[in-house]
Length: 89
Image (cartoon, rainbow, N blue to C red; front, side):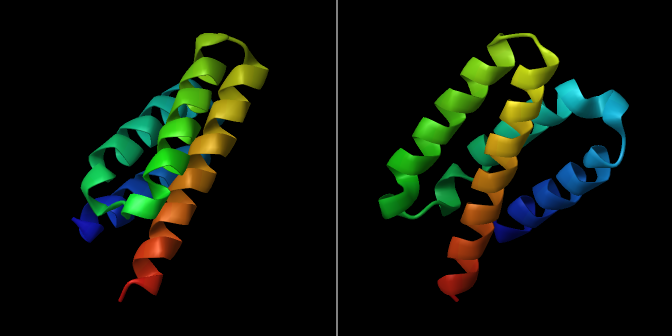
């Protein structure tokens, strides 16, 4: 399962290189987080849930700022999950 998070991070980094995929990057990040739910520690569950809700609200705005906010929120959450998994080794 940890490989799926790392794969998601790789996909995210790859897509960030191209601005034409910005809207899709938000959706990809949300999907990456949802796929990683089994790896999320119980103490992070509420934080991740709140982050995904905020990201979806930003995405629903349908603006460039909303998309940028969604990407920033989800990228940070993915990084937090990755760091928590490193600490658990």
